[in-house]
Length: 291
Ligand code: HBI
Ligand code: FE
Image 1 (cartoon, rainbow, N blue to C red):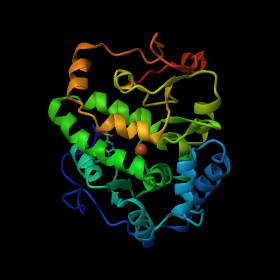
Image 2 (image 1 turned 135 degrees about the vertical axis):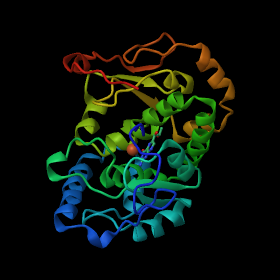
Image 3 (image 1 turned 120 degrees about the vertical axis):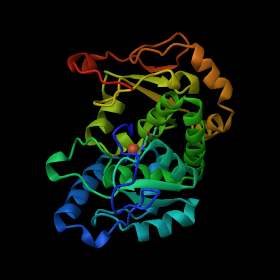
Image 4 (image 1 turned 60 degrees about the vertical axis):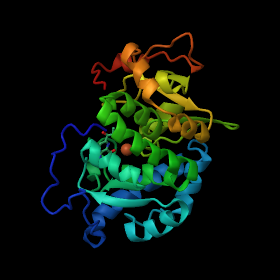
């Protein structure tokens, strides 16, 4: 998510690090019902589609469909597993604030939940996207280390003027990543697992390209911010993601300064091709907002 629209000062009532109390007692029955509806829809769809690491995390956190989770209980479980904590924020926070939290194993999550008439689309990440989508993977030690490394890398990328490249890595892994497993392709990205439509589209539609994950390649590829992705990148394992991220990015940024972007729908001779997409869906939907 781009934080272009986030103000540079915390809003009234927020702490200097932009966190707020979750104020769990303040949720209405109708808000809990939105969580339950979304949870039940995704819980039915994800077995056989989400990777084992995600499904195990969902179970370990006991994020059942009784309503919006209370961060105090969620954090007791999560913190014991990987040292991560979920903190409530009012919405998008500035990049620097976001990375500073991640680097300290704190995941900023929206406190609000979408309205019933917005079940399938919303602009800012709400508590369902942030908690159901992101937090299960944070129970996995390898992924948990990756997210911390990403936060540290984000602070560096900001200083080096390379945030647009690093943000693509986040987008194509943390938000929209696929993984290769012995049972076939599986999803792990939070933007997919929290979306009914994209869960099916990302795995089954003939439209998008599905390509092997290569760090430099991913950082050269713009992404869709307004619709289903035109390309998904497939990880061989979570360990590969962590190993790639722990290397020094300075030489990579230097190469990125010389290399052009790769078109969003392109397949290069170096790509490992899982699916050569028809791009039919993208062609039928005119708007092309990319980042
Ligand atoms: N703030 N709350 C919130 N959630 C995000 O995912 C987020 C953010 N601020 C910045 C940001 N993401 C992105 O700029 C980075 O992931 C690149
Ligand atoms: Fe997200």
